Amino acid sequence: MPSTGRIFLDLVFAGLDRIPVPGEEHFARQFEMMAGGMYNAARALHRLGVHVELAADLGNDLPSKIIRELWEVDGLPDAFLRWHDKPTVAVTCSFSLADDRAFLSYIDEKPVPLADPAIIDEHDVKCVLLSGIPENDIFIPLLERAKARDIPIYMDSQFDHPPMTQSWMPRLISLVDTLFCNEGESKALSGKQEVEDAGRVLGEMGPTVVIKLGGKGALLTKNDSSFRLPAPPLNVVDTTGAGDCFVAGFCYAKLHGYDDRSALAHAITCGSLSCGGVGGAAAPSEDELLASIKNTSADLSVTMDNL
Image 1: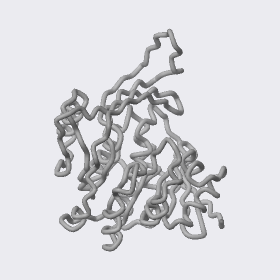
Image 2: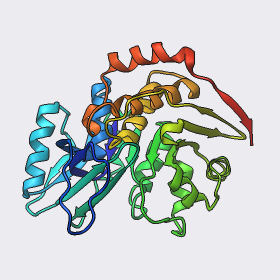
Image 3: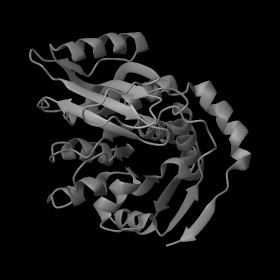
């Protein structure tokens, strides 16, 4: 399973009661340094027993070297890892509150991503995951090749500014089998203020739409119907990377042949379990995920809505 996106070195400050104001020094109760960004989803999939190849770029800067060391500790494959003789710094400070977090980030100019359609031909690809809506149409030929071979395509939107005005966006979204958004992203992309309406509008472009609702669970829209699943009660330590782990749980379930409801339950559970520790490094193992699914599945209620 190839996946692509930007890797950040995450500096996570957890256990905060508030974010410091200018001129103030404020102390966190916990701190972790880990690889983040797209690495969160790749690491989560790896822990779930999925063979995942992360197409990523690292440079000659210190954050890249630290990420490489963490990569080796995690044991992720590196066939699509590219090194550059220049800085490719991407660093995020995550300030984790009880039920949300804020980020302060810096990135160098991103190298041209690996998007050669030959990847689909030369490797035993089971599915493709894009972390973030691309900045241009560079991935469309690769996705068209995957689509022609009936290879599932997943995309987690992850954007700051609505890019729907780009002429290539409708084609990109039409190629995607499942589009993941958080609540704000779904509204910005669709122009709608209700998540049900947002899911319907985005779904009309082709994909199954999964909207992550944090502690309220998630909404899945497909064709002319939708359903929600709640999130289980949990003691939240940090939500950094939870959305990436959510996506990993969904992809894991679909690769194992589960239907949409079961896949959504796996996604919610995987994302929720990751909140029990600091950062995306708290992603569960396959055994932990399946045990939690077994314990909580009887409590999950499904609400069907006709859109």
